Length: 194
Length: 194
DNA sequence: ATAAAAATATACCAATCGGTATATTTTAGG
DNA sequence: CCTAAAATATACCGATTGGTATATTTTTAT
Image (cartoon, rainbow over all chains, first blue to last red; front, side):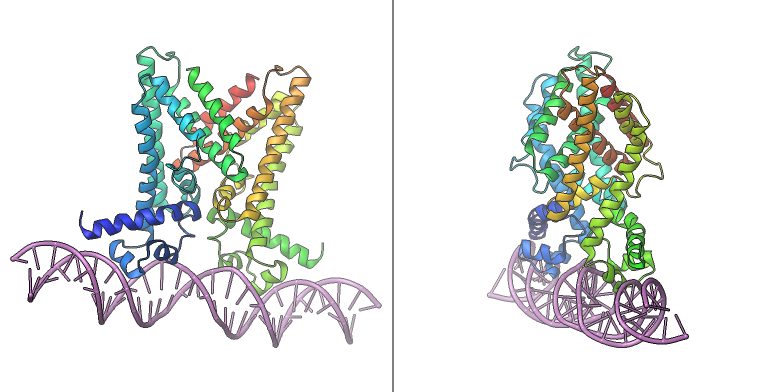
């Protein structure tokens, strides 16, 4: 990894929490120079503009949570236990392994849905991939006979994702952590009834 | 209603769609003067700053949807039908009676949760009020014997709200309206099983 | 060690930001 | 109709915005 690559990564890591808390538009070049200790010239030597940093920061923050989840999933043997990773992980929303500033997908989706098409597309891909993982796990569970065959994998996947994202919003804005715990308990019950 | 009051209302109405699509921070004074045809001087003669406009715009947009919902609810006789208004209304998310730019609560919550405490509090109140309406409707339904007595009103209220908000996000960012319809169908099933 | 190349810093740009003091116009009451 | 007050417009402020051309430093390969 050459010097430039390392600096690029450094910029991404240092600005990631800012982008995820303040949002893309509200994160200024000044915020970025202060967080990195670098100058604007240096940043623009490695990225062509702010949006490109925002895009790579999104991917970085996303990977942070997806790799955490998939690691946890790989530790489970049954498909039920694999799916149960989601409510269990999100119930511990304060976990420092989570990106600072809340759910990357939710934050980005809400900010860009009417304004930044290229980011919107990126978020769409992330959601689709998440949905596909859940669909896969449910369908595999059906095939092994672990779940009932009449389960609609896509509907269930959407329900799990929607509830988690809604829960994140409710919890962050109210400050009530038990909202998250109650809702994750509900998701848990749903998964246990598959 | 004096002239100033009318102008104030005019500013709120004309800027409401902008605030709800671009967000508070990204809505500039210039956006506001262009949308109203007024000058900055005129706007600042009626509001003390941009945040105050944003606050009143939030209340305006919120009232738009809450009054639509409560009107619909008042038309229903059974408590089940009253609660069913929520998934039915949100399933028609394209309805022009909805504020432009998506769910006011969701948009505002995500933008301000880490940055604008006074707006965060306002959103928190809105959510609490929504939750209380649902809890009331469920408990009344229990008292009349319409619903089973072992229903946990608060948990159910949270579940309905979280699913709706998650659904709005998923639908807006993916552009897939059937996500919304599938998820509202799920909420409907939940309500029918009370 | 040195020279070429790559990476970073300096110093600047025009545009826009939110906000305001003051001048002008419009409104409303007598 | 006239006047006082209220409402709106004009013209400006300093600060900050994203971005860039150029100079300097640092790295890398020879």
